[in-house]
Length: 392
Image 1 (tube, rainbow, N blue to C red):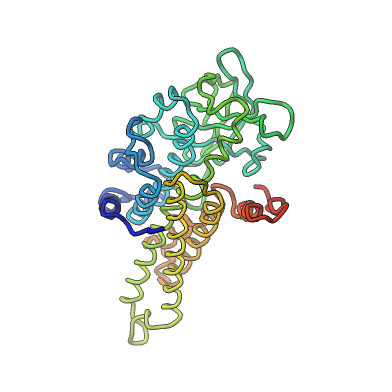
Image 2 (image 1 turned 60 degrees about the horizontal axis):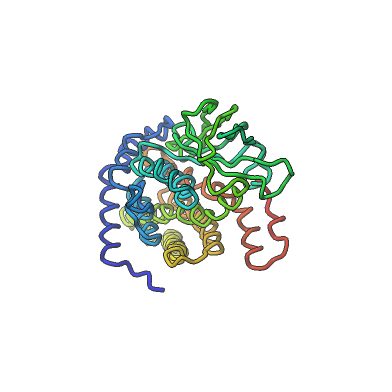
């Protein structure tokens, strides 16, 4: 495997960084403070083509291959200081758009993908429930067939993008035979359907410019044509898309790690104590060295997943490792950046403390790392390893 960027990939990376630094995140401190979705920046991302990077041109996208998409997302994470905006983009792509692309009928793809790529529709995934998150078979939202529609009833919570979303990918129970995979079905549900209630917006520690909410379905009539895959195939729909969510969603975190590394190097070289720059002190230089090690290892893990998906190969083991390592590495790097910057790192005006608050979500979303380690144990042959992961 050769992960040397092609001339086209280097040009794309440069262009994405320049776009993000120039156009995005100008109001990030205020958006974070007020938990405000930056819709103008969302529209700028759409105009630049971000929302269609992995989608074929026939459906309004850019048709980038998986590895190139990974590189572009990393560049977006480096250039954009608003991690919440980047997270909203990734939810749109990897919790919604990818499901339609992989499992939607041609009718569904043509109905929704062009608008999702154009940003006129915002996507979300309505999966988690008050008592079911990583435990898919514990879902209680039900969908009962009624002629040409399914009547959807239930409550979904912790839904990123939920309060502003126009299109939801929803997993619901279509059978009553207990905890069986073939009792679940995936649907495309639009927010304008009767009985879709955006019940509440949730306040959270970080990623505050990505709105999170509670969504209720009260007899919502979902057209049968909006089933993804087939009835009873919802478990497979979600698990087949896991590789994308667990890896591509974390590519911007590699960019954020490099951004934090660069900021820490600049500060270590400019900040003087005891007559010399603080970078001369071993405690500081070693911390920065570890930031670099984590960055390069995280990048290699993710590029390998991108390469495997480009080659049409399975990548579940690699994607699971990437999710764990990248998310935890970003937390450690953000914490190190706070320490390197000292008192300035603790001030809200500097933005470093916001990076740490944002990073803390990574080990939780897209399946908690406790559960991922159980899955990883099973993938490498430890029998019953998943049972040691605490369901969330």
